[in-house]
Image 1 (cartoon, rainbow, N blue to C red):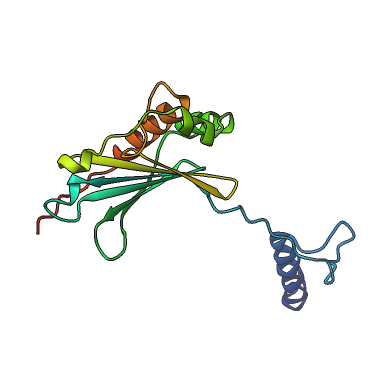
Image 2: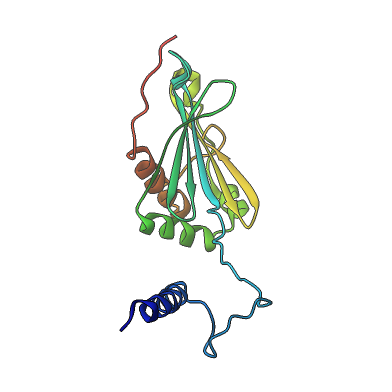
Length: 179
C-alpha cells in the first residue's frame, strides 16, 4: 500500500468509526433531522407526611424539628424557631415504611378518624413536646395536632406515621443550640 492510498483510506475509517460510536443514522444509514427528540423526566417526589415537633424544645433555643417524608422515602430535617426553617439534612428511610404509611392512608377517612379520637394533651404547657402532623393526599392537606387530638397508635395511620417519623429522626442528629 502506498502512502497516498493510506492517506485516503484513513479518513474514511475514522469517519465510519465516529458515526458508529455516536449511533448516528437509522437502519438505512441516515438520520432524520426532523424527528422529535423525546426526553423522560421523573416527577419530583411529593410530600406525604410532615411532622413538626414543637413546644419545650424552644426553651434553650431554636431546637424544635420538622421532618418531611416524601413518597420516594427521602426525608428532610429542618430546624424550627428561626425566621424560616433551616435545612439540617436530607436522607432516606426504608421504603417499606413509606409503603406502610401510604397503605394506611389509602384506606383511611381522615375526618372520620378525627371524629373518633379523644382529646389531646398540651405537653408544651409543661415544657414537653407536641407534634403537629400534616398529611398530604392528592394535593390536599389534613392536619392533626397532638394538643387537640390524641394520637392513638392503635390506629393504623398513627402507627405507620410514628414508625416513619422515628426512622426519619434516626437519620441524623439535631445539635442543640443554646441562646
